[in-house]
Image 1: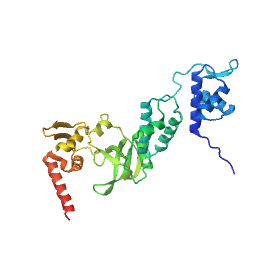
Image 2: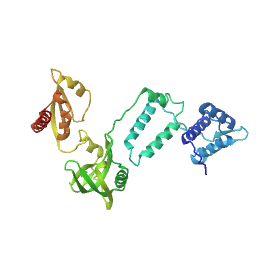
Image 3: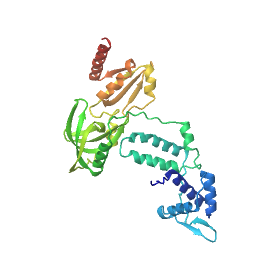
Image 4: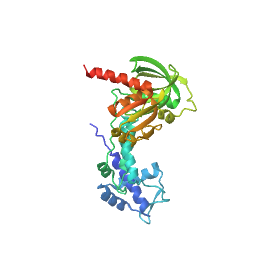
Length: 334
């Protein structure tokens, strides 16, 4: 029975990083001193052979110009690299931890393993040179992201759509539309993949609707990449496109005026909900809130605030909310 030798990659990276650090700090360092300092810093007893192999890795694979002086009995840089070490401040480390939390978005996508690998490599080179350790920072704060989790494995769909975007190739998808509860074929020019509250979408030009539409990846039943190239419109900018939505819905935007009472106004005023918003403060502590957004989406948002919010304009939205509330009353009066 063969025995498999398992190498702790994080430990190797930490060791190589420390050797690089020692070389940058001193004009010359002996093999004996490297072993002693590794024992002090990592608690590791390392052989001469291992250290020589690490130095070869730094020199041959990573391109550092490391030489050995017989007269001085030590290793040295022929030319010291300008930025040989990874030194992180609290802010930079905070950014890394936020990034690590965001990895949860990439569950069930082909990118998941690469982000996890990157996280491990970054953690391996964090040393005590950092102002505050990553573990201490984790104990001091947390960045929770409570995403909705799709039931469908989207890895294959994600990979095909992403590849089609990069190659500017048209796709043929079978898509389940929630509103009509129907599945139909769509020929689409895919422009961009994005994530909203844990659900992955892509936007692109739909040839069936003759317009740019959004498609949830977990509602795509099949995807086929066609041998048809497309050109993205020069005036299309995803970030301008997504900005038109109040949350996720785009198109059919209307200007809405909402009155929030003095109780709810305190929370509404302290946030920028949308870049088109305007707020007018009234004498009794209430506010008039104006925003341009998709009618259906703003309707759901307003209803969520119950009696603390009243739509004043337009009349069509006000009437639509009245009908919705009548239905709700009917349900609870049964």
